[in-house]
Image (cartoon, rainbow, N blue to C red):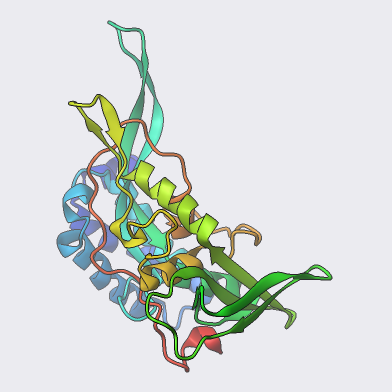
Length: 303
């Protein structure tokens, strides 16, 4: 009898969601109820196929194994997350390279890493909020607020609980510089928690971005690091794009919280900023649709 993994790897990627139908329905029904299982499958099948054939990673995804596509699709059923794009996008399909071993070069004796490309569902900060709400860790999260050097802002702890005292300068003078962004979290017990992304943390993330997007320059025989342009050009990070900063704040707000169990086929977007980088970077495509953080007052994350 043919092994299921072998069958998946021989199947066209566009046919794999249909092949996963029964398992998708079974998994979703066990966790979230069978009443909406079929409708959710049909909806996500459409979104998933669109990402495979027209999404920003379509070229890279052509080279991944069918089993990788299968587990990425099932990830949606396991976590009840949708690929639908909108104001609060919860996840998207991408292609990542993972180290799977090492191989010794016969001529030099040097060990080289072996990488394999895989399909992965990346969970955005808003997707993580949803998962933590379902896990009973938090009740709600306010929209992030950007702080400038002209504002009154204090952040600290009192009896083991974090606090923020913030007053916006009105009018805000021209040339005001960004110094932080913060977010308020209401925990399951009703207590409040705050997460602050300050200048030091912004610059640290900018360094990781530079390493992740570095390239080798044959003329200088050195690595050239190119951080995401949205981090800005100033050395103190004060010209960072504010929408980008809000997104980063949402993504990293839960780094001190218990780890979520999300299963295989996906990863939290927050982990990508600080994960080790491979020694030989390759060109990667980026999602064209980012996560919008300008949500309305009746946004579900504020309920």
